[in-house]
Image 1 (cartoon, rainbow, N blue to C red):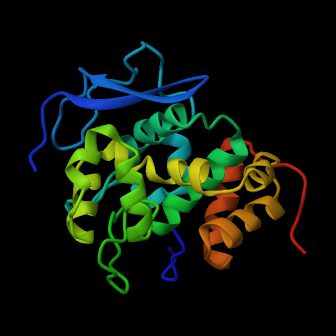
Image 2 (cartoon, rainbow, N blue to C red):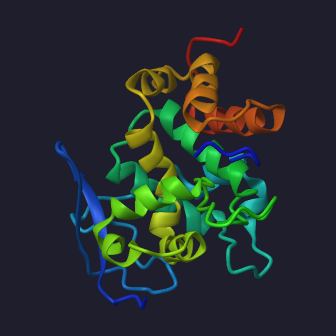
Length: 235
């Protein structure tokens, strides 16, 4: 990720993940064929409710501007976002409120409350998703998804980002992928504690950017919305 700014045709039957004790498994998703990334079901292919992580109402407490969109093709409302964030939690086995709060607040901050899925300021080619992953991580993320890996090879950074962002489930899955594959176990343990010190370590040592008051404000709201507070403070 390491951002300094804060941070092919599609087929009708897509590939969608669910988790086992061994990790994510990607299988054909027969109920979510929409090419525009819209959601047509709130249960995964195993019949499990994917709304258990966060609700739209909680998301609006964190990102109130996500109540509506201005017509931009990048923009998503809280009603669009929460199901896909919950799918990411299911896929990457994110179960602690502390980790959920960190991931949601990161995406809310980086995407200007889900208005953008690519970097506009300063406009770095290939940087994006709601988590504003840097292009090298976009490449790693796409390679980890069977539905995308075969199409991703050789694409320029902007084209690769466009491929990932064509599915909302992948756009909003990037933060959870990054945490579970690129951050150290002690960073995850710190987040699971729910404390500020653990969150600051995640931002500085894994995301690779600076803790700012604006960024912290989103985390504070996410902690409050999810009841994720715990021990540990900065300083």
